[in-house]
Image (tube, rainbow over all chains, first blue to last red; front, side, top):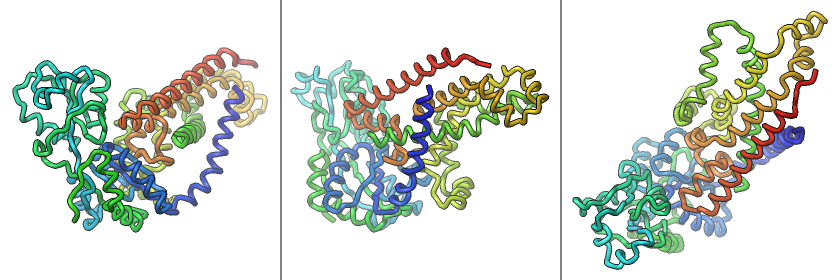
Length: 252
Length: 220
């Protein structure tokens, strides 16, 4: 048991030593981005390129847009918020927690209907057939919490009266988990999640999922953050965003 | 992933040290006092056992905010922001793991034969001497149990860190949050290795704990 105590002291000593350089290193340019979960994989690909081009390291924190919004209100140290909607960035501007002139649309979300591999033959008969097949269970994100849930519910309104069981997930990630784990046969999720089996939903079936970014007032690296926002609207970034399953906003 | 491991071990080690420093006198006082207040304090210490972590997380989120009294006092004292920092996680973890350190120590202190302490005192042993030569040898297994439980429970924390941590890699992203993050992004390979690692760690800790509690019998 003595070695456990030794290990404990070694860790504490190392903590003390490592605390010094880390504290000194913090203020050097590190960009902290809070990102909605659905865009996190895309952002990781984007920042890899960005860091290689500019040498600026980026730290990424992902959670649902609503949760990030709350964390920012309670003092989270982020420079940028990449939200999954336009509501929360607008509210942060209203509450004077974000810079009004920085708000921009960086991507438009695309909704798809993911289905379990067992439904391959039904899927061949089209989207409407799947959504009207009775006795299936469909997972959709909660419209109160998730922007993709709002769009999903709009799609389902077209198929009222269909005898399908509906599961409400906290977000598209959980809706996808329900499908993968087998609790659901169908799931309305983001194309960016790249499900193995899915059909695109026509964009005119739901109101646009406008994903906006905003620079936070509490940012410790405002200049870097503005630089990144500008880079995010450039050709190279737009190509990556599209490749990961989003539509692009028109050029301003 | 290594970064998350390091943050987790660091958080658990710092928290355990603070818990021993703060928990020992508290447990001693609780085991000796006849005051009615002690029951109220025992209840408060035991609260994290009963309450969902989200309750503690919610109050701490509000308490640590930069515009709050605590947040501003911290800023004035240390010059650093408290919300979503490593220090905030340490404070949250101390509160959350408090019963796991205080309760075993309190039980051990209570079982100390009062006569031994009085005998030592009558032979001229100072309070410090009594602590070192009577209390420590008799309660050593309980100290080890308390420290291990405090450490392990902090490693297993999720709800509180989810609410007050902010998932910042290299600062507040611990293993349990990193695991949640991987599951959220459907990266099940990484999630499997994290989950398996945490499970093995907990199993080994508990195994060592139970083995040592058999071996460290009391010697006088």
